[in-house]
Image 1 (spheres, helix red, strand yellow):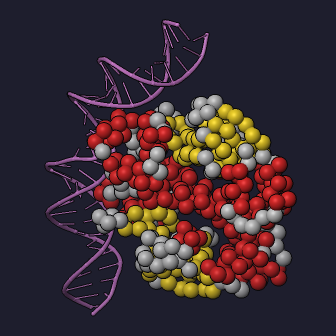
Image 2 (image 1 turned 90 degrees about the vertical axis):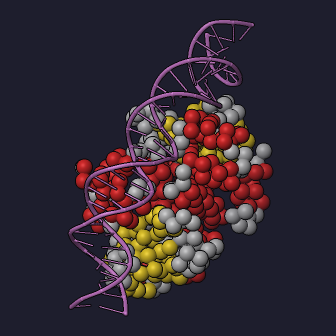
Image 3 (image 1 turned 135 degrees about the vertical axis):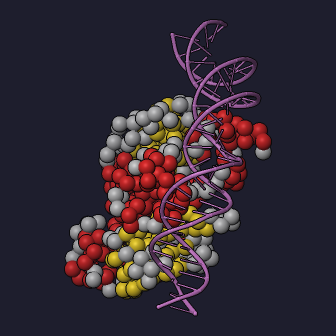
Amino acid sequence: MFKLLADYIKQAGEIDEHTLAFILSKFKLIKTRRNQILLDYHEVCKNHYFVNKGCIRVFTINKTGLETTRFFAFEGGFGTALPSLIDQQPAFEYLQTIEKSELLTITRTDFYSLVDQIPQFAKVYRHILELGFITAQKRIYGFQGFDAIEKVKWINNQYPKFLSRISNKMAASYLGLSPSTLSRIKHKL
Amino acid sequence: MFKLLADYIKQAGEIDEHTLAFILSKFKLIKTRRNQILLDYHEVCKNHYFVNKGCIRVFTINKTGLETTRFFAFEGGFGTALPSLIDQQPAFEYLQTIEKSELLTITRTDFYSLVDQIPQFAKVYRHILELGFITAQKRIYGFQGFDAIEKVKWINNQYPKFLSRISNKMAASYLGLSPSTLSRIKHKL
DNA sequence: TTAAAACGTTGCCCTAAGTCAACGTTTTCA
DNA sequence: TGAAAACGTTGACTTAGGGCAACGTTTTAA
């Protein structure tokens, strides 16, 4: 049950079994349904989630009702409303499992206690942040100056299973396209 | 000369004068010209820069010759090609001072030594990453589903001096607009 | 289990924003 | 300091992709 998470932690640096077990003891398994909301728009985020199975989507809805997907966390990755978790302001975004999922969750308090007390876990957090930053950068990089076809090729390249795993609507809202445009392009490719 | 940087470090947490002085001793002042390139496209990034005066622009040019600006670092902020600095791969982006600038620079080696040896500096790095991540997120957030006018209002809101300080061309390449469109919108507002 | 709601795809039309070009202004650098 | 290059602005034209609607399919939930 903790294998994926243990691997994730180990990859950030050497760690003894005892410390690892202590870290893991702070995580709790939760099972969620398809389309279950983990965090509502106006809530302050209090948990970090590691995806053991399934997928977390981070998305928002603006005043005109347009839905925008910011991020997907798949098996073996962390997902949360990080800005809200960091500064404890309302999230202004939703967290949702878009498939039946198994998540390992840790409270914000426990998470930052581990960061402050256990140097190896500080490294893990550093790794999460570095990866998050690079991912966000790549996305800006990947999107600016790309037309619709290039965006779709880009996502196929970054994560080949993306379009078959994610619904047309959510994929479109991630890529910044209308569902109809994405549908037409998939047909064309 | 080190005042801004010292303030930046102090804001991440309590620090004694001696440790602070040790950290500062690793930074070196460099003065740069307008439009001076600090890092070339295929180079691996070896330095982190703190902007004391002036402005660093991070940008890239794709195969069709289109220039895209990823980030501006102004006075009191850090700027570098962070993905390249982290993983020591070629940057595929440029660093440039777009105004006559004064930068406090530290080598990658010294930077990560400080991160590993001095807990307070690890906090500074954590802060840089958290801020970078949130900034990148806000930008994706701010841009998706926005039309040209909304983007311009957004940037005026985020950083009111932006359009007067940054050239039309660079501002357009940051906002993902053509220079003509940005020019027309500025006229309209 | 089934009625209702949501989704995917496609056609038609429209509009926001890009391209290109012209021209005056500003910046560069030899 | 002055010629050349780059930039900003504006007009005329073009086009990528969004909006809307229709309709069949899939999903939801009572």
